[in-house]
Length: 278
Image 1 (spheres, rainbow, N blue to C red):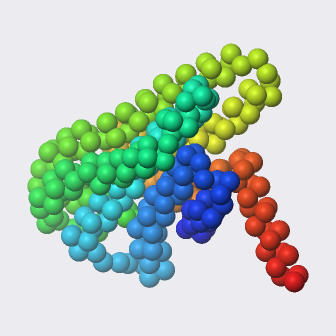
Image 2: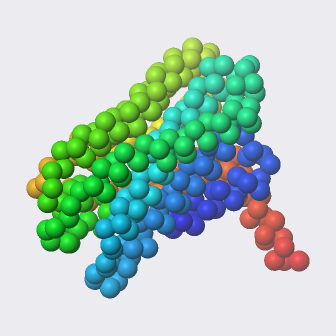
């Protein structure tokens, strides 16, 4: 469900001219990050559930952690870019076409993905220097940072320090940026005299706000304020939210609450039905 819904969003935005706008371009990139995220974790997780056991070498486990981190971090900055798009559309509508030009969109998306590939590198390097000589069973359904550190027989203080140094700017900086932009957006919307225009402005932001709250809430609780060792089950439960639930529900949230996407879906359904009748 997660893969099919996100692939559907990417394809729908790509083939529908009416959806070729910055907001939907960023949405397609958000869905692309969810596709990478899900395809990295879920296949091995399903294998563990069906077979009951699975084996990964240390290098493959560290690679899974890195490839998990890339779309996670890129998504943080993509959500910030989407909030900036809404800020420009509502607070500076006359400059929207200039500020959110195709060149600027591509630069923003390229920066998000570049940061996604760059930020996890220090953590990956320090993790690769650890020695793993205790039991080899990970108390998790994927190679996350907390269960990996539990298996190490060498000091993990350097890894924990680097992880905290990376996590704070990755999670808090985009989140604070989103808060500031939405304070400005809400202030601008409140000053709109027309109730219809005010509701329309709020509706364009509501889906994004729901996704931001879901994603940043679980992410910060795991990596910035992580549970203690005796709460690893809580860590796994929170991980399910942002690895499985969020990728599955993000496209539904945007599709069900967005008039343009619903119209595009209705159009293609009608074309498909006409094709079947003919």
